[in-house]
Image (cartoon, rainbow, N blue to C red; front, side, top):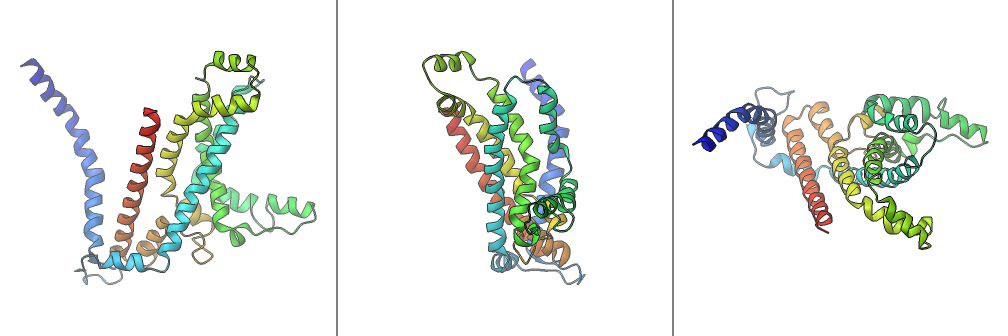
Length: 290
């Protein structure tokens, strides 16, 4: 009887959180699914009609859809490669005993706390500007022609900006994992004649595998919805060179006022994110079992 009463009490205490979660997530998702089945344009109020999966057909046949999908996957993969490789390198460096180690760690982690729109503005106007940016000044100092990064390599420029933001996160997770590495094992390998490279490949990297999978999972979920950096820097252009699925949904729903088509695109983006998340979680599960 006491156990049943405690279960009832725990359910009552959890019910407000469950109701809030339902209102916060399930209701908007249900409304999005409903709108995706309508022909609903804000410029033509009162003309809404049920069209079934017609919006999904238009979304998949949109000439910008496949370039946006490729750009999204390229963005995610590019940022992951930079942050994982750079995160491992920075974690190894920050793990070394040096003077002012705490200050250096704070400085390395600082970019993660900068708002995406602010960091995009800094990169656009102060670093990558082809006229008065820092990189342009360095190029002219070396006798080279400055590069208009956002015109000649828009997607690569956005990848660099987003990677700069997420590199501290990867470094922090990997550094925490690196500090749990058994030092006696490293010392024993060194006494057996293993050099720094062999110790790194055979001891450090396997130890960081689980931390790397966690970094990949968390970052992928957030990278699939990158938006502010694109809006501030390239606005999806030139053409569709830097348009991602998230930005394509924004253009259809907010610029073309097509709520139905934008909702269908949002549902497709959610499904894609869930597929990627499930795949990565299975990959992490296999690594944890190994």
